[in-house]
Length: 342
Image (cartoon, rainbow, N blue to C red; front, side):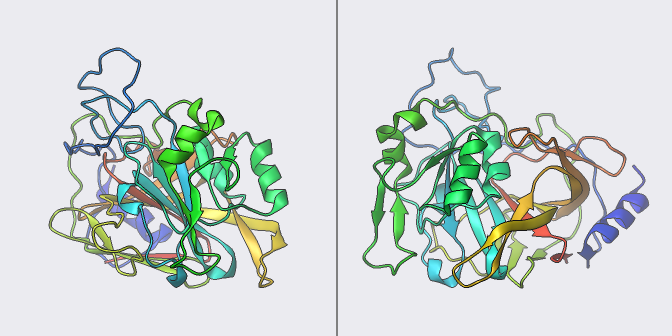
């Protein structure tokens, strides 16, 4: 791949203010310890060193927990503070919703937190986000048409009344007061417990290769409507969010940022304030940006029309791009949004 050609493509895809160059597609496997926890042992044969966590790609020396992915919808406005439980998430997707706001879709598998809050309602976009895990989506509820849409797609939705584990925090005001215990949901719901562990969510790097290079220190993502996610990286290679709603020690701290340029369509209904609700289209293809440490890779994402199919990443020449193992934040940015790298 010619460095100049890749850099030019990255400039067309996103507004970039950086001296970093585009990077090779195959990235080095990071030898980082997997999250622990009181995991139910897998009934599979004795695990080997090759076992990896499906939602992080990190080594699983004690075996992959034999339980489904539990995915929780979390509010992401100022009313959400303090968010709880995100520090235990393997992966977080940020999706655009109505009114120019965003919500978080937090994935839990390698470890389960005591509670996650504040839990909010579902959107049609969640089908494409959650279906690849084959797991359960935990939410406060949803519009009847959307709930039917999720059911028609075969997605397992769990809301208050479907299982134990949901409660209301008297210290929070409605509708930001719903709290859930993923472990209690798993223990009390036969429908959830019978689900299988998730397959790999992203194309995790498994072979040694060149490390990303560059001098990137910040990634500024603006969703349509003005909501921003401003990330800065430190010496340890992790990313810190400027407007994090979680308390210190319980924040989601990714090692990789993956931005996908997506199309949105009108979901066909309005929120209580009269705003049209957008729905993300996670099929077909689009531009992507992967930031790891100080390096940035310009890429393309693609996925089949089947919402349970995996996401594929390629470079400008069509060669596969692999994601470094670790915690990953995925931002679904509409065409009206922007990304600046500096």
